Image (cartoon, rainbow, N blue to C red; front, side, top):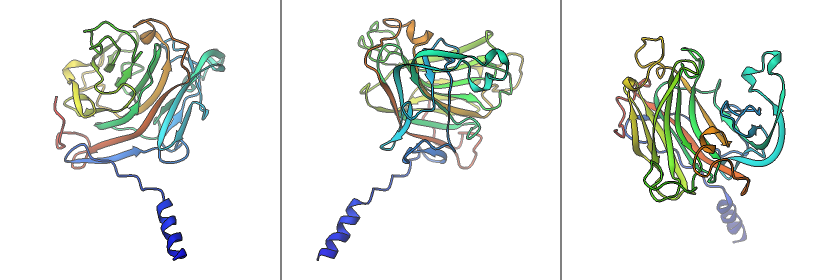
Length: 317
């Protein structure tokens, strides 16, 4: 009897097995995923930034590789922005190749930025991220993609796909504006950057209001094929762009620049021109630390034709 009880107790204590990802429709095959079920960020999947550059947007944080800013806990990736004075490299690693970019910078906040660059990149498919976003003036969480090879030149000639950007969630806004249905910021942005090398770059996108709880988990996704890129939140499309909507300066290649492999970036910025010029303006220094929680990342492609979504069940425009 006691032995049976011990067996039952041991069985009850065994951790549940995680459920496999659910395909978004017929024909999709999972080609890459991170469920964040371990005890640490998987270095085979992600590289963490370590710089105080500010992203070229006058952001106010230093990105660090410390567990205080990026860690895995309870089956989630936690990106934490903290109000703390920090000194680090003034430029990102790929720019620290000349003597004039070897200096240090000090910022008032720290946070984290993770990228799959050099580890995983894709050409076409459906990229999904389930995440919970922080609120407050000056907060700028983002899920986005950059070209793996910069075939058409430096930013933004080789493109950028912003799957999700949110600025100043929960802050007062003008009712009736995109992303502001009831006087409280709920705007989710989906944007493409393209054209020529800065400052000859252009962008095109749309803003929609997040449905449901601002402090809840939502799934942000793009379906990307040679024919179109469609943005979705919780499975509902809110924007589609087609090759006629973008271009690469000096290139006649059809679909350029979004005909190449792109890698994924997850980050939480503090301040910068985009959030600081909206809503109340600036950065509210109260309420830190702020946190972006990522439950999982799934990348799907068509099993019959990985270079297209044409044979997969699409969500439509």
